[in-house]
Image (cartoon, rainbow, N blue to C red):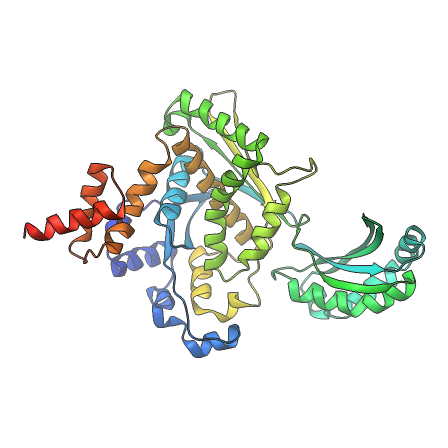
Length: 421
């Protein structure tokens, strides 16, 4: 298959579904799960609490992605048109020199057990480590099926954490959760071993829950970007300058990383995964060992004058459990990607985040963000001003030509259009 589908934005929804289904090799009927009625109130009532109904957001598809030599179409849920356009554009530039190359660590999650009132925390730490085999066995017994599929408890780590006048003892269960996100599995294990941990340490348990700092579950993506495809050597140099500001300045880093998460969160949401867990882990990772907030990605020029972009961050996503299995739209989204493991999904999501970042930095280092962003946003402005389906196109064209995207201007252009009829 080729994820390069020129003119897709000009197709109707039914035409777009047909070409996307054919390209992805799935039955077009699967995409009916993206209809408003694909997930009704009763189904939603089983997934959330105090349900009143459902709240729909657009689901689109990012094109042009090549990941590890294979083309793929990527579903994205977002209300912002420029997000999908940017991811597709970044992927188009990356595919010139082979697209994205990805890798990942094992699907390792951790749960923490916090102990207070430990008289001898340093000695207690060693007592817990001496009891490692017993505690690992007790935790593993909570989920024997996990071991059957190659996962399970891998280790017990114990730390002392000081704050103000307290020294806390914190035990970590290190668990391979396979194709699950893993929160339920590790939380159950932590609760099961907590009393025994407290008994050995001589303390009292307060917290027993997973950490969303999933720094043992990393996904990575890299791409070499052709200098001419980016716009020439000056654009390459200025993109490096833009990255270096994000690396050195937390004010810029926050926006730089938000751009990455524009792409990542849209795919995480589409596939029924936990956007808050992924976002928390990513921003925690951005602090790093330096102790200050910095850019998640890196950009550097290679010996040929091309730009090399890389991204590494925690990616705790799964294919089993939760909305990934119960939400028909999430199932359809996963089917569209063609992935068969949580690791593949994590790597694909990371590639999309890097594609988004590439497109954003290229625009910022050349024409500026407003031209492209507002051209795409003009449709929303026209609709907000009251334009009907046959009026949106002419109003958008005029807003772009005038380079004036305010609501008042859109309303004036719409009024003028109607007077001329």
